[in-house]
Length: 314
Ligand code: SF4
Image (cartoon, rainbow, N blue to C red; front, side, top):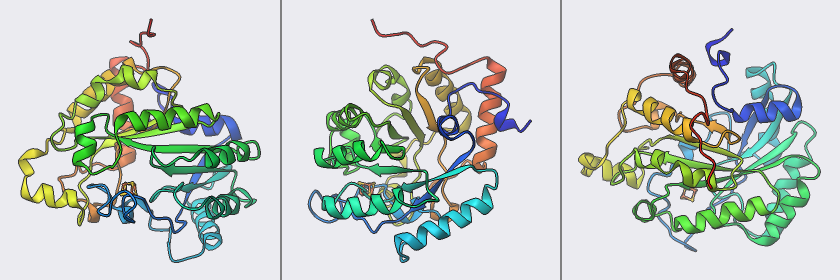
């Protein structure tokens, strides 16, 4: 049995998709030519300090191609790579995929939802960019094919959000999560660990706040400093402000956090992965699949499972 399947010590989001479709489901990343209010001037122009949409976009996804072309190319690529996949879902990850005129957004979503090769839609966006009309549309669309919303929450510390130029507060992020969930849509949250000026273990201490949110899944991973970003400048000027976890320490914190995490929450990701050519800070130098397998084995050896020390809020 492959090491990655050795244990079910935490609830993997891929198993949610497997449960819905009866087998492996793979995302197909798509670039719909979106921008972002933190880049086009409506909220800011510099973007979030760490943001590199180039690094977030897989190599097979060519933003110059039409959406239809990207779907065909992405499906062909992923089908070759994952021959055992039984389904594929369109994934709008880079930029803010709920920002723009509703009519234009609906056209993009409909192209994805209407494609016979795609079984669902995952929409990545900011938590402060969720108009009611758009959520109403997504709620209705979800009756035809699964629709999943992924929100970039990044940090629960307002000071960090401000330093990273996110342009929203944590309270706004919580409200965004609640509004998506109130529309009956599964909502995932993305967090980064290791921002400068923030003790990296702090995220793991606030597990009870995560448990209290109406989240369906969570994605957390170590921060990468991508070349050419404002964060890269900060790193070059003040490397002492950055405290990157050692892999063993990250495992330790992650395990303690998982133990206290709500057992019904799905885990989308626990480790970051990006091409090394984009990353400025020292890398752990371990391939993602190896890292996941090592962590799974580490949990197994210690008998730690998601929720094993979870206490229901009274
Ligand atoms: S991370 Fe998202 S919100 Fe921030 S600048 Fe990049 S695309 Fe915009």
